[in-house]
Length: 489
Image 1 (tube, rainbow, N blue to C red):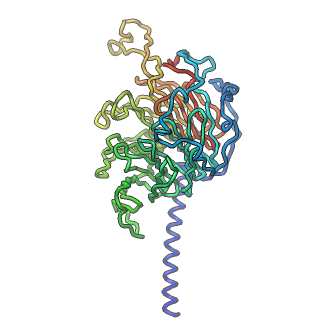
Image 2 (spheres, helix red, strand yellow):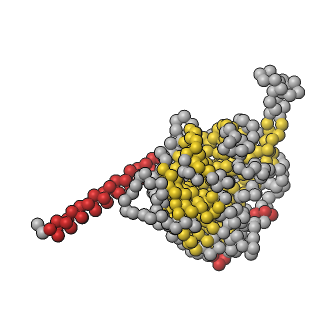
Image 3 (cartoon, helix red, strand yellow):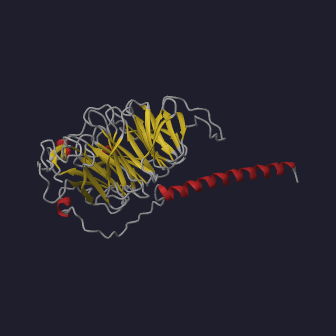
């Protein structure tokens, strides 16, 4: 055989083997995702759920009142960019949200509503052509971003007359997570096309694309410096990207022991032992907490890449799907954290007044929603608008008496946070969460979606909730009252 032909045949054989290895690796990753993360099919699957008796009566007539025409069924066509219709994001002309506009139509009340609803549907946002996987309010409070299986990110004006401002189309596979910059002028999106992308939210233009290892599950800007963002992926990688730094040298050979991997910006790659499903970056920008598919909470030092602490969320090691935090008063670091797990439980932890130095303790275990085998997300609201009953501790441990010496426990009131979560059924669930151990209660099940609810997000300063679903829609819910609300449990 001719030497040239033999060399060519050997080269083709080597390339074929390399391609087969890559195909095998992708197939293994695909199987793992099917089992533990999400349903890869983006085909619309409207299930005919048989609803059980609902303990929280819902007035569908009231929900329909006041909805704009676009929410009633006249949604803009998928892929249409209507950026000229809305104000610029994060500019003086766009401005911050006016709470009186966002909350218009509500009636002041301090009592439990007669119909059992603390939140009612205000707006229905349509336009996505696939399941909506993630949703986030901007820090300024006026805008809402949503990411979908239709490969797009959409930015909405979330005031009383909702408008689709931008349709961002550069991802090639499902969008999995979003994060706004502090000034609401930039957005970073993560997707299963193994990239993170940054966007100018005023113009809707792509400003950067960063290659990652594996399907990117989560992303967050560094609060101390928005030039840096952190992401987690299915390849057991925690990635740190500094957009100011030039990309490191790359090669076709993959080195599993390398601390730095290639990308479109300066990157540090931290390798761990499980898929990373959620991240939370501390406010000082030096530490990050990750939740992974092995049920572990890991604390990382972003300066050294070292793991400082590993805590098991629960004994059976069910995957963690999301981490949510709630800021209390003027604490520099959020004190309370909610952890969604595949065992259908949200665990709420008290992190103390100075995490990570203070001791963390389990405060509540919230049940009622469905999280098993689905990447469900939750969110806190703590605007000081809500309170709930609590009980004083005994003056002497074990004597069964309250501080006044009475046998009967005397109800007192304490501030209450709201924690909302999506669910693998077509509902979102709302919990009142107190600061005392065990002082928590599911207070409402929000009906309106036609398929599983993947993610929820609260407005940064008002009791307004956004939910997104596999039914292709985003829904915005608002509190039924102004002023302080007491949960009568």
